[in-house]
Image 1 (cartoon, rainbow, N blue to C red):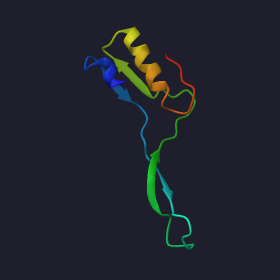
Image 2 (tube, rainbow, N blue to C red):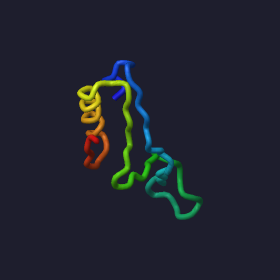
Image 3 (tube, rainbow, N blue to C red):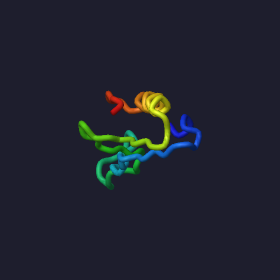
Length: 79
């Protein structure tokens, strides 16, 4: 999204990635903790606004939002 604006606007991310996903390798004995973190996720509830944009035209903001909407695995809409 920031590449679409070419340093002319501001983007605020309103979603904080704060939950670690851990995983143990296969064929490891039981016990000895959860395993190393393999990635991070966040919980996004219905109706939550993940991105805010300011300082750009409506057409540029709409194009950047459609590009960003392809990343998450959920349906999004431009408000």
